[in-house]
Length: 78
Image (cartoon, rainbow, N blue to C red):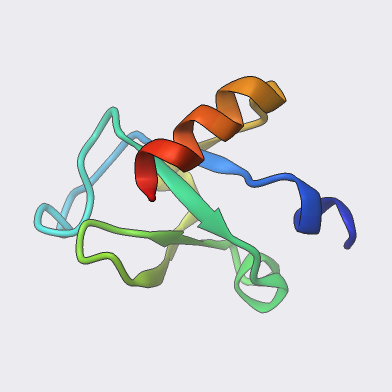
């Protein structure tokens, strides 16, 4: 989808049970597009290790942010 090329999605972590070293509740994580993961109820995010991993979607709330906020977060993550 072309929208993924221009917009970055973020996910707010709601639950880190069994993944305390990888995820922090209340923290925003950058989403990596992965249609196969989505088809199975997962979302792929860049976790605390700096690597992308798939986690159950119910651990997160997906956010659509205004472009200026999105750009600010991307700069902060760089």
